[in-house]
Amino acid sequence: APPDTSPCTSLQFDEDVALVSALLTVCYQGRASLEKPRPLTVLAKLLVATEKYGMADVAHWVQAAWDKKATWAPLEAYFVAIAHGLEGCAKAAALTVRERPSLLTAVYIPTMEQASASVYHRLLKFIDAYRQIARTHLSPLVQPLRECMQLHDKSNATEEKAMALETF
Image (spheres, rainbow, N blue to C red):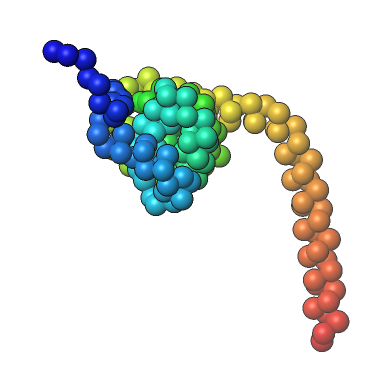
Protein backbone atom coordinates (compact mmCIF):
# COMPACT_ATOMS: atom_id res chain seq x y z
CA ALA A 1 0.00 0.00 0.00
CA PRO A 2 1.26 3.49 -0.81
CA PRO A 3 2.25 5.65 2.17
CA ASP A 4 -0.46 7.86 3.65
CA THR A 5 0.03 11.40 2.42
CA SER A 6 -3.02 12.95 4.04
CA PRO A 7 -2.47 16.13 6.10
CA CYS A 8 -4.17 14.59 9.17
CA THR A 9 -2.10 13.28 12.00
CA SER A 10 -3.12 10.06 13.63
CA LEU A 11 -2.36 9.43 17.28
CA GLN A 12 -2.27 6.00 18.85
CA PHE A 13 -3.29 5.54 22.47
CA ASP A 14 -3.16 2.41 24.58
CA GLU A 15 -6.02 3.70 26.74
CA ASP A 16 -9.69 2.98 26.05
CA VAL A 17 -11.91 5.44 24.18
CA ALA A 18 -13.66 6.69 27.33
CA LEU A 19 -10.35 7.59 28.99
CA VAL A 20 -8.96 9.27 25.87
CA SER A 21 -12.19 11.24 25.62
CA ALA A 22 -11.92 12.30 29.27
CA LEU A 23 -8.27 13.24 28.78
CA LEU A 24 -9.03 15.34 25.70
CA THR A 25 -11.94 17.00 27.50
CA VAL A 26 -9.57 18.11 30.25
CA CYS A 27 -7.03 19.26 27.66
CA TYR A 28 -9.53 21.38 25.75
CA GLN A 29 -11.81 22.57 28.54
CA GLY A 30 -9.16 22.89 31.23
CA ARG A 31 -9.60 22.76 34.96
CA ALA A 32 -13.33 23.58 34.74
CA SER A 33 -14.02 20.17 33.18
CA LEU A 34 -12.87 18.53 36.41
CA GLU A 35 -15.40 20.39 38.54
CA LYS A 36 -18.02 17.81 37.64
CA PRO A 37 -17.90 14.84 40.01
CA ARG A 38 -15.85 11.99 38.61
CA PRO A 39 -15.19 8.60 40.18
CA LEU A 40 -11.79 8.16 41.79
CA THR A 41 -11.06 5.34 39.34
CA VAL A 42 -11.43 7.77 36.42
CA LEU A 43 -9.25 10.36 38.14
CA ALA A 44 -6.63 7.68 38.86
CA LYS A 45 -6.59 6.60 35.21
CA LEU A 46 -6.28 10.24 34.17
CA LEU A 47 -3.35 10.71 36.55
CA VAL A 48 -1.58 7.68 35.11
CA ALA A 49 -2.22 8.85 31.53
CA THR A 50 -1.06 12.42 32.18
CA GLU A 51 2.16 11.07 33.64
CA LYS A 52 2.62 8.65 30.76
CA TYR A 53 2.17 11.37 28.14
CA GLY A 54 4.07 14.09 30.01
CA MET A 55 1.08 16.40 30.43
CA ALA A 56 2.27 18.32 33.48
CA ASP A 57 -0.35 21.10 33.45
CA VAL A 58 -3.21 18.67 33.00
CA ALA A 59 -1.71 16.39 35.66
CA HIS A 60 -1.72 19.31 38.10
CA TRP A 61 -5.44 19.90 37.51
CA VAL A 62 -6.28 16.21 37.78
CA GLN A 63 -4.22 15.92 40.97
CA ALA A 64 -6.17 18.81 42.50
CA ALA A 65 -9.46 17.09 41.60
CA TRP A 66 -8.13 13.82 43.06
CA ASP A 67 -7.06 15.50 46.30
CA LYS A 68 -10.47 17.12 46.73
CA LYS A 69 -12.36 13.86 46.14
CA ALA A 70 -9.90 11.79 48.21
CA THR A 71 -10.46 14.04 51.22
CA TRP A 72 -14.07 12.89 51.32
CA ALA A 73 -13.39 9.24 50.50
CA PRO A 74 -9.88 8.47 51.79
CA LEU A 75 -10.35 4.73 52.22
CA GLU A 76 -11.59 4.32 48.67
CA ALA A 77 -8.81 6.64 47.49
CA TYR A 78 -6.23 4.40 49.18
CA PHE A 79 -7.41 1.26 47.42
CA VAL A 80 -7.90 2.95 44.04
CA ALA A 81 -4.45 4.54 44.25
CA ILE A 82 -2.81 1.22 45.09
CA ALA A 83 -4.64 -0.47 42.21
CA HIS A 84 -3.29 2.13 39.77
CA GLY A 85 0.25 2.32 41.10
CA LEU A 86 -0.15 5.84 42.52
CA GLU A 87 2.03 5.46 45.62
CA GLY A 88 2.01 9.16 46.53
CA CYS A 89 -1.78 9.29 46.39
CA ALA A 90 -2.00 6.06 48.41
CA LYS A 91 0.28 7.49 51.12
CA ALA A 92 -1.75 10.69 51.35
CA ALA A 93 -4.97 8.69 51.61
CA ALA A 94 -3.46 6.43 54.29
CA LEU A 95 -2.55 9.51 56.33
CA THR A 96 -6.15 10.70 56.12
CA VAL A 97 -7.47 7.26 57.09
CA ARG A 98 -5.03 7.29 60.00
CA GLU A 99 -6.73 10.42 61.30
CA ARG A 100 -10.17 8.78 60.95
CA PRO A 101 -9.60 5.08 61.74
CA SER A 102 -13.32 4.48 62.28
CA LEU A 103 -13.56 4.47 58.48
CA LEU A 104 -11.93 1.03 58.52
CA THR A 105 -15.01 -0.54 60.06
CA ALA A 106 -17.79 1.93 59.31
CA VAL A 107 -17.60 2.15 55.53
CA TYR A 108 -18.00 -0.50 52.86
CA ILE A 109 -15.77 0.09 49.86
CA PRO A 110 -16.37 -2.22 46.86
CA THR A 111 -12.85 -1.44 45.64
CA MET A 112 -11.50 -3.33 48.65
CA GLU A 113 -12.77 -6.58 47.14
CA GLN A 114 -10.36 -6.22 44.24
CA ALA A 115 -7.38 -5.52 46.51
CA SER A 116 -5.21 -8.21 47.98
CA ALA A 117 -5.36 -8.87 51.69
CA SER A 118 -1.77 -7.67 51.99
CA VAL A 119 -2.77 -4.17 50.81
CA TYR A 120 -5.39 -3.91 53.55
CA HIS A 121 -3.01 -5.48 56.07
CA ARG A 122 -0.34 -2.91 55.22
CA LEU A 123 -2.81 -0.10 55.92
CA LEU A 124 -3.79 -1.66 59.25
CA LYS A 125 -0.13 -2.07 60.23
CA PHE A 126 0.55 1.58 59.35
CA ILE A 127 -2.33 2.79 61.52
CA ASP A 128 -1.33 0.49 64.39
CA ALA A 129 2.30 1.67 64.22
CA TYR A 130 1.10 5.28 64.36
CA ARG A 131 -1.02 4.51 67.43
CA GLN A 132 1.93 2.82 69.14
CA ILE A 133 4.17 5.80 68.47
CA ALA A 134 1.51 8.18 69.73
CA ARG A 135 1.05 6.15 72.91
CA THR A 136 4.78 5.96 73.54
CA HIS A 137 5.37 9.66 73.09
CA LEU A 138 2.15 11.03 74.51
CA SER A 139 1.71 8.78 77.56
CA PRO A 140 4.16 10.76 79.71
CA LEU A 141 2.06 13.87 79.07
CA VAL A 142 -1.34 12.35 79.81
CA GLN A 143 -1.07 11.92 83.60
CA PRO A 144 0.12 15.47 84.32
CA LEU A 145 -2.69 16.79 82.10
CA ARG A 146 -5.27 14.69 83.94
CA GLU A 147 -4.00 15.97 87.28
CA CYS A 148 -4.15 19.54 86.03
CA MET A 149 -7.69 19.05 84.75
CA GLN A 150 -8.78 17.51 88.06
CA LEU A 151 -7.37 20.48 89.98
CA HIS A 152 -9.12 22.86 87.59
CA ASP A 153 -12.41 20.95 87.97
CA LYS A 154 -12.13 21.06 91.78
CA SER A 155 -11.46 24.79 91.84
CA ASN A 156 -14.38 25.42 89.44
CA ALA A 157 -16.66 23.25 91.58
CA THR A 158 -15.67 25.22 94.72
CA GLU A 159 -16.34 28.53 92.93
CA GLU A 160 -19.70 27.26 91.67
CA LYS A 161 -20.72 26.20 95.20
CA ALA A 162 -19.70 29.60 96.58
CA MET A 163 -21.73 31.38 93.91
CA ALA A 164 -24.73 29.13 94.59
CA LEU A 165 -24.57 29.93 98.32
CA GLU A 166 -24.35 33.67 97.59
CA THR A 167 -27.64 33.56 95.66
CA PHE A 168 -29.55 32.42 98.82
